[in-house]
Length: 268
Image (cartoon, rainbow, N blue to C red; front, top):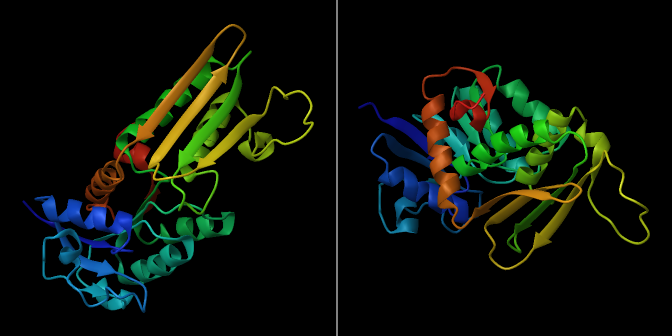
């Protein structure tokens, strides 16, 4: 079995540690790089020590040096950091799995441009279950085009910095596309005061932040006399890590192109 050489960005964060632990346990993946920002106190330490399994890979703040010998970089950090890592990946021919959320339109264009030279899996949520949920939403929205109002409710931990979540926005995009609408034109991100009656064509978003909620998402199709709710709840970040590893395997034999988890899971 040929091992796939993997790097992890943001290695000392919550998701980074989960990814390191998952890679170290996987027989066909090998951790060869662990990245952190300059000044991070963990730079220079053995990345495996963060999860109780020393592995001989030191956490590095030199991106170019760390990426040598790396075939795929997995990045769940912040938009600015991800784009800096992506530029280095593009120069060095390293493919990338991007689970970072909160990108603006221009930043997404930069990711698309990089995909001309390297292969990228870019998805707001790497969970296999969430991506199956996207497919279910597409089917439901296609069948419920008339007479149903759509509302999306999401909840995350108190430390999450963007809202609505990337997953909630993706759910909105999937539903809007199936309904023949443009999410940019029909999304409502907050209601307060005298808002008037609900416009039928809108898709509403509600956001909850608190405690240690990993991630809950519900899409409600509210009709007359019935309500259909499609819900996904995450109890552990391990689901994101396992999805990211599947994405890394998917990229191993690809040279360029922009993909998402629907591609990885064969749902397109």
